[in-house]
Length: 424
Image (tube, rainbow, N blue to C red):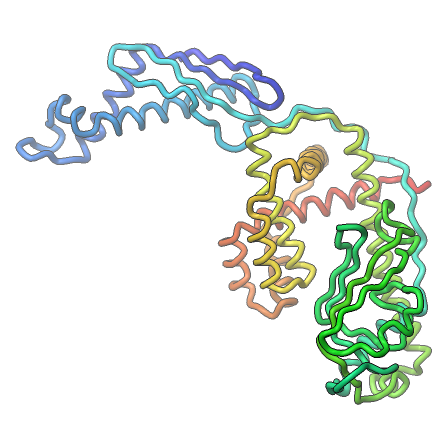
C-alpha cells in the first residue's frame, strides 16, 4: 500500500492510499472466508458455501467492510509515517468499488491539530487591582443572612420605605446582559440595587406594587471585572412579583443571636469574607488578562469541521460552569436547548483559547486525574442536594464530564500563568 499525504491548506490533509490488486484480492478473500465460517447456508455444510453464493448474498457488505478496514490501515500508516495529530475522525471521501483482480485508490480527508508556536507565557506583565470592600457590600451581606431568621409576610398595595420587593433583576449594557438574578430581594428606601447606585435609588422603589416593572440607570463601578465596561452607563430592569415586610430580629439582635461579639464585630467578619471573595475575583481577572496577552501573540489556522464538533463540547463546558455556580437545572436545560446549534463563528476565539491552553498544558504536563474529577462531582452533588451517583450518571448521559475535565485543566493552566506573571 502506497500512502501520500497532501497539505490542502490550514488544518486539512488529503490522504491517498494506492491499494495493489493482490492486497485487494487478499482482503476480499479474508472477508468472504469469515462470512463462510459464521453463516450456514441451506444445502451446504458450514464453511463450504461456494464463493459465488457468498458474493451474491453478502458481496456489498463484505466490500464495504474491507474498504473501511483498508481506509483505517491507510490512516494508521499515514499517521505513523508523517507524525500526524488527527483531530476527530477521518472521512473517506473517495469511495471506490473494490473488485477482485483490480487495484484501488482510497482518498481520505482529515483535519490535524493546528500547527502554531506558543509564544512566551511566563513573566508577562499585568496590573493587579487592590481589593476594596465598601460599606454597602457589608450591609447587603448582613441583610442576606438576616433574612434567614424571622419571616417575610406579603403586603397588599404599594411598597413603602423599609419594605422588601421580591423581583427579577437584569443589568444590561446595550443589548448585553451583564447580570441577572431571579427572585432576589430589594430593600425599598435603600440607595443600592444589585451592587449599583442609581440616581435617587433610595426613592425609585417607593410606591411600586406586585406586577410593576421599573427601569433605572446607573454607572458600572471603576473596579468592574471587565475593562471594556468600567465606568460605563448601564440599565437596571426590575420586575416585581411581591411586596413583603420582614418580621424578625434587627441586625443587632441577629448578630447577638448568632453569637457575634457585636454588630461591628460581625461587620468585620463579613468584610474579611468579602475581601477573600474579591481576592479570588481578582485572581480570575489577572488570569484572563494574561491569557489574552498570550492569545494576541498567537497565530493559527482553525480546523473547520473539528470546530463544529468542538462548538458543541464548549456548550457542555459552559453547562458545567453553570452547575458549579449553582444555576437551577431548568435554566441549564433551557441553555442547552437554545445553544445546541451554536454557530462555529461564535466560538472561534474560544477554540483558539482552548488550543493554546491545551498546548501549554502539554508543555507543562498539566493533567486532571480521575480522583480530581470524582471529588469535583461529589462537591457539586453536595451543593445541589443530589447524590454523587445520580449526578455522575446525568453528567455521563449529557456528555458534561468531558467539558468538566477541560474546565478543570483550564483552571490549572490559568493558575500557572497567574503565578508566573509579573505585576506592574
